[in-house]
Image 1 (cartoon, rainbow, N blue to C red):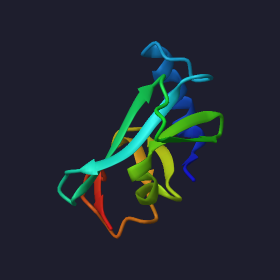
Image 2 (cartoon, rainbow, N blue to C red):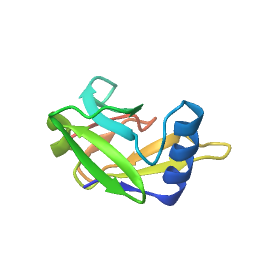
Image 3 (cartoon, helix red, strand yellow):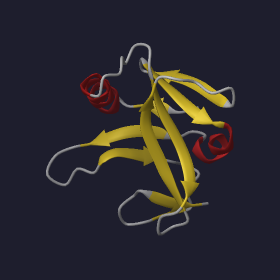
Image 4 (cartoon, helix red, strand yellow):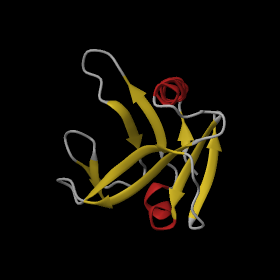
Length: 109
């Protein structure tokens, strides 16, 4: 359902540990909410609790939580990490997005 690149895995695991989370047992919560210049924006945060309405996916050793309403928007998405001088941080490569904004943080279908 959601893939995690090697670079995103390494960065997420390091950041999780820095924030007091355990990358082996805790989660990255990924979702979609209304907002941004294209209509929908991505949500990404660390979490250690799964709700009844969450779906759990695991790829590349990273556990991902997605709330029920966001699943359709994120199907087939790859979570990547872009570093360097022009790096943006975590990047969502979403095949469902018909249009994205210039910063890549929001999209529309």
